[in-house]
Image (cartoon, rainbow, N blue to C red; front, side):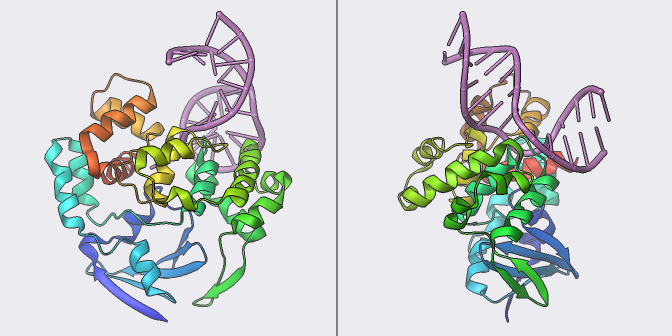
Length: 274
DNA sequence: GCCCAGGAGTGCA
DNA sequence: TGCACTCATGGG
């Protein structure tokens, strides 16, 4: 068992986990049981220190993006004079962007399209239960996220039976393509080029590509626009466009390198009615 | 029964 | 290029 802690003011487990960037976590004891790739951790906070217990501290230190100073990022958010953003930044100063596994993000966000978060979590959980490896951490059983070869070999019916709906063939096609080609050459690409490449996969459009770039490739200059951010754009920024690509461009021009952080604050703030 | 959910593929003008 | 239509599924 390895264990470390961090200033809770800039690391709040609930705000970090509950803003739609991760689908594999559950309430556990006084905090949360969190899964990423084939790793598990227990994260909990007393409001002063946030503690992470795992068998791989190095992995989760990077996963929770703890090398980065969020006090400055958080402060920047209040300079735009947008009440929703200021409130969210004030209340959610401990919200952090996770550095997650690229392939896990690709499959997870293909599932996310036109879907709601509770159901997305259920689908992913069933896929892991069916194809992942059984492990145990702190007396709790969990399943790893399946490798691409396992997903590729599963067949459309497996995904259908997990409740994926019409996204079953997207997962089948994309996993088989990644099995053949790999994604190694995607890592060094700049955001715009990466997004262009992601758009060529079945089931990945503009919004999902932005999520994968942001959460799976740590491209913080991405701004995914879903139904919630479209609401934010109209309600809180007085925007007139309806094309989500244009809305994303608007926000990227406004927030630049901090686009991803602003997006998460706004998403959480709007959904939570802050 | 309806509307919505972290949308995208397709066909047609 | 733009736009309407369609796609499974479960929760509210």
